[in-house]
Image (cartoon, rainbow, N blue to C red; front, top):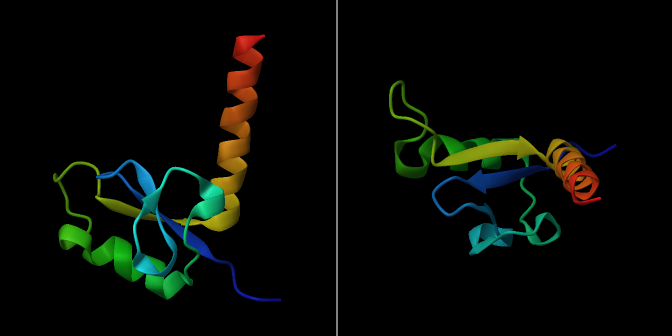
Length: 83
């Protein structure tokens, strides 16, 4: 079994990092998949990483399956509210 992949969410751009560190996308299907070490490096070093009292971090590393599951829950809730 291969290790889980991570997506990187950019609060700054309100989008997912694209594949190979290139661009951003609002669609999970088009987001880049990174191994844990790379995703944490991106999130920890972008504009200085996470700091106490800085506010929201610029980037957040999220396990791929967690991102997909959360998106599915949001979509279901939105569809239920529209009915």
